[in-house]
Image (cartoon, rainbow, N blue to C red; front, top):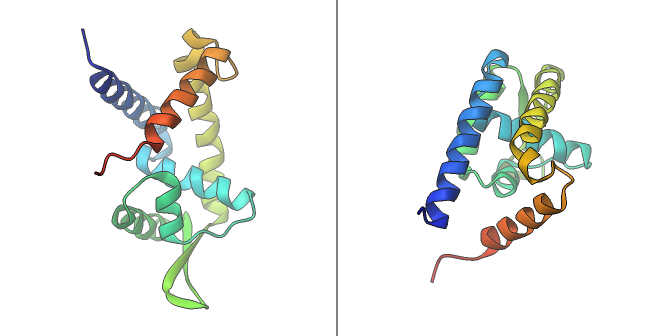
Length: 145
């Protein structure tokens, strides 16, 4: 019998591989998708996040977000601008091309998520909501002493 840690690991790897495969035709990796879709959501909420804020939002390491930002900027998907109030802070925004790439990617991942969650009653199912609450509890539990 597998431990919960092993099952979480296997599920996360299954999801990452599935997203990578589904988004390969769009030229996106899972990490790039997380970056772009999170930035898209934050912008829709009226925010103009810094690289640090996006790192905190996504759970990705700040250094990795910085590397992704440079790559996605070079590819014309995001724009990085120094914050006029603090030159150390870099603000991020999607370009028109970035929005054109991420919006269909979001739809693709939503369809994939529907397939993953079908055994639990779909995205709006009671079992899915319960799972989300349990996962949130685990994510919010500090592991540092």
